[in-house]
Image 1 (tube, rainbow, N blue to C red):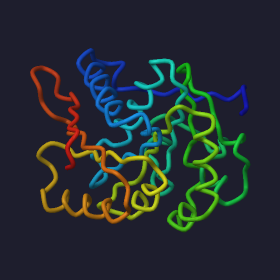
Image 2 (image 1 turned 180 degrees about the vertical axis):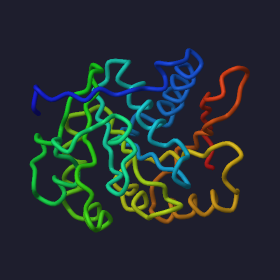
Image 3 (image 1 turned 120 degrees about the vertical axis):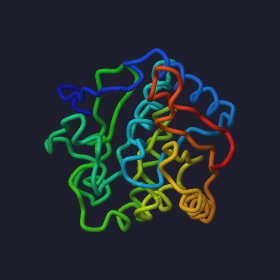
Image 4 (image 1 turned 45 degrees about the vertical axis):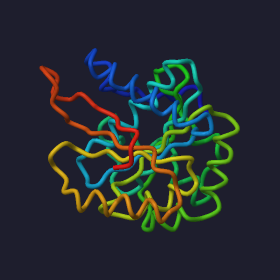
Length: 226
């Protein structure tokens, strides 16, 4: 890990007391899923559902408790994090590791938040699914488990591409982000069915952009399957 490199991230939970409390509640519900739930994939139905924001704030919420957390941007197609946080191409990322162009320590980057490290998506490869399905991804997850208390993986929307279904079996559970009133139940059920076929435990769903009082971005968590 290059100590001279650091990524400055922006968190929704820093902007509102209600959002901060919602993520604490979400963290508590994840903890009640069991002590064996340490590697968590986060996906959504469609682009724009807010999964990148939710997954990053989940990672921060765990790091706030003093746990060592790694946030992995596994969206090697169109990374929201790379644009939002102005992450330059000088950071080798997941795609470089999976393609054998970088070693594990090269891709671990510090953030401004204590106990929170990040792996960026890296250069966009021609076939992300092939990289995620190879043995180096399993090797990557195994190494992460030996170092970090929690690994939070931001994956592409499953209603658009199958990447999350490839990542999910290597995780302990998956969370689906669903925006209130924007996704049909049929499409949400289709994503649920795809995840069940991957044999990964569905921890629950985050209802995003739910209006509550004066806070239009409060996030809610349900421990039931979507």
